[in-house]
Image (tube, rainbow, N blue to C red; front, side, top):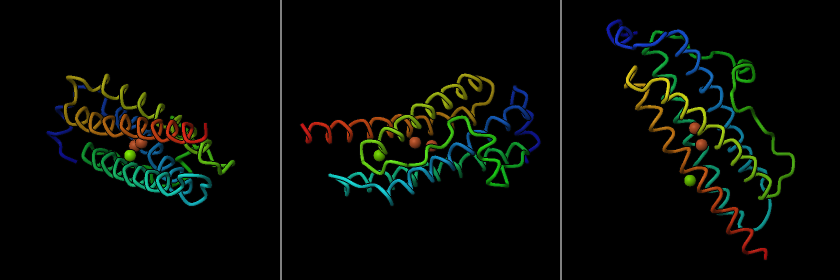
Length: 163
Ligand code: FE
Ligand code: FE
Ligand code: MG
């Protein structure tokens, strides 16, 4: 922990760490949802979808890394047990039950829309109070907005192909 670095955060730092840990739980669940989705998905345009899902999985893992680094910098302890992911998550986890491309894309779009809310809220909270966390949340939000659009565009392409 950087003592001065923590001091300049004009917020309740323990509460902020709690929110960062909740986002960390989301990122791990999102990572797994994408990664396992890429393994089980079936249907037309499968190759393009698998590539996109795996790219997004890697991005979610990178987001988890960013969150843990910030939690440690603030003197917090990141979630240590996977069982806490379920207790802490904002966005939950949707197991792919129907392996069809359309359903998997829809489930992941829902997850991205929730992630967009999470990082928008984090930005609102940290604005002018904690520029480091604000910048991190902005960087992640930028990716989540791109993820949502990528998936919606794929879904649209697939629906057009099916018509
Ligand atoms: Fe993410
Ligand atoms: Fe995402
Ligand atoms: Mg993408």
